[in-house]
View 1: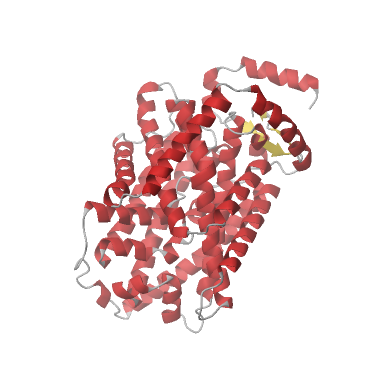
View 2: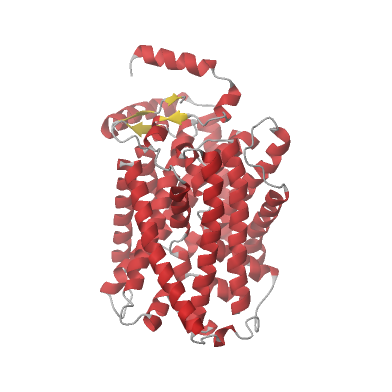
Length: 497
């Protein structure tokens, strides 16, 4: 970039009004957005939502929901209620996403409502805990299913699982670094593949119901364990399977006509997932009693062995497709968060740069993949899920609270979508309950450590963002320069359409 263009860009930046950077009647375009004019129709958005939500959760963890409520009736009710909560949360995010048309989901919303400190703490927690741990969990699940056929009658060695998970992360990171379109095409293909296995399970269940396999649904609320604690923990496990409902908000700048396509994708995509989840659980209960389901190591595989034999091998194959699709969708969107945080000066500047050749946020995606590989080393999926769920609902609640706050503090912002105020109030109250429930019902030091880690971000904020000491910049400048040359990346140029 020449000196003249730099001076021109500086003059343009100085001439901008503060409100313009938050919102304009048409979202601003970046080089990244120009390349990403691929989400032309709601179908791509629906595939991103469905493809990211339906991962390993519905195939391996329905027993966690059942274990907390103890009976078929409450179990199915919890799965439907989780879908309703995810839809309500996504509608809140739809208003935020069309009001503040910036990528990064919670990050820009917290920035506008509460200022830079909560936004920094969100990016700090997301980049180092929630997003990489989610990516690691999904890839570990993929590795377990992909390696299972090669070790009949026994569990695959942990070394094999971890190496395979690391390979999956490297491949997904590479694909998304090379091309936005390639990542999207891969997502659409894998979404189609996972819908095949979802359809097989649902159709098999409907056929079995038609044949009279309904004995497990009689007295479906008998022996249920209903309490505030058990319901909250059941929601925790169910909502893990639904996580991903806010993924489109990470790539708002890359959606064409987000005012129409963002809410449309949400309204179609999440109820579609909810119907699929409830029908899949009904299918499971046609061939398994509650006790059998709780004893199963992988519910979908047990279902396949009983219903699809001798073609039961297709279940682990398609579940592997499903998990890799979910991991790809997570990587595709989470790389944008690193990109936005870097652009705002809350992360290393090089993370906000884009590839000259491929016009993708390659440094951000590579950074994200590297952190995820570190999480694979301990490899304890249950612990990772607990950390993830606890931390993520703190910020979901804060973000929806931001919507309520901005109804009063930012009345001047244009709102193409305006949802009833009762919806964000409900979601905020449920978020508070979900955060407090595990602490009250089963207090552990892990939750205290998680809170302390989130708050430790304040130290880095004060040192590197607020005071901006010179010595970190002296260290980071040569690193940034060498990474620029190695990765062939440059700062993103914002140009209006």
